[in-house]
Length: 250
Ligand code: PGA
Image (cartoon, rainbow, N blue to C red):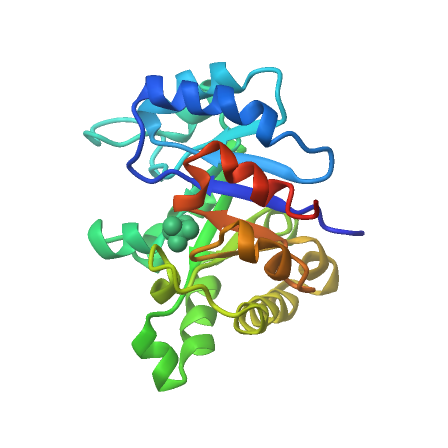
């Protein structure tokens, strides 16, 4: 079974609700595709406007975070039920910015992974090494730990629906993209780990994305790699020409 390419945007803390609606309106034409799945993960407050704007198009709207409790006294957090009710299916978990600035750990990411599957959301779990770790030669050790702990307690049936985004921290927002060989090496390593944990069928079905300075000029080479099933795109997903990444084959 061929895995469908997923072009996922991560808007981070950018765009007001009205700006989000206007951008998506313009993206309906540029991001049209029958062959590539298109997703924009947007700030929580932009979700209703974004879902309304994307209606009737192939653009799906996702979230950038979710809390692991059902409801209650957790000021400022967003629950899975809230996202589902707003029309969300995908949610980014454990982005390196959340790990660095908001104290996310492999354990909280795991709790959120379990909550997603308990509720019916699909997580896009991020992992990735720092430049120091790469230079120390511990990239794969570090990523194996992030993925192993993140996936603790997930069944094979759940794991195969999850998405993993490999995002080397040194490539995020820096313009310094990993080479397609570097990206493929780690994405293959992640798929091999999933094979160890869950077997061939899950390893062949799970989608593994590359993220970190993906742009129109490098998307085709990255997405052509055997174990790279699309991209998690920050800066280059904020403008209608995100469509050049979606339509990377043209
Ligand atoms: P970038 O961000 O494409 O701007 O490097 C990617 C990400 O952080 O998801």
